Length: 105
Image 1 (cartoon, rainbow, N blue to C red):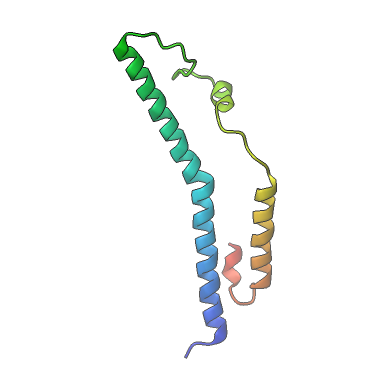
Image 2 (image 1 turned 60 degrees about the horizontal axis):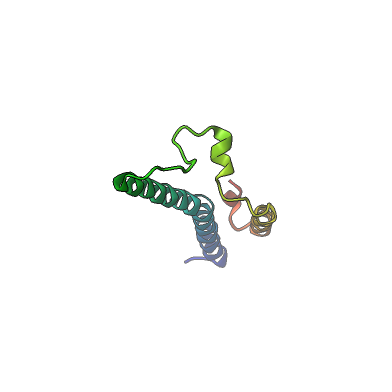
């Protein structure tokens, strides 16, 4: 027999894990893939320019400093979404602490 608390604990575990995986993919995976695509397109453009015999006057170089690299990144939209996510996660942990105490880890 399973009790209602066991079922709720299982559902909460799956909810917490799925939210973490999706959140990490949105925050890490998508920007990583977009940066790789941008680098691939840039390398392809440089290769095409060299093949045509033209000069490549773009400032994208492998020897960029840390600050030059950061200046080419996409702007960070807002910290509100980050704080909102933390508040929601705190609410889940607080609300369901009795059902699933390990959610806080």
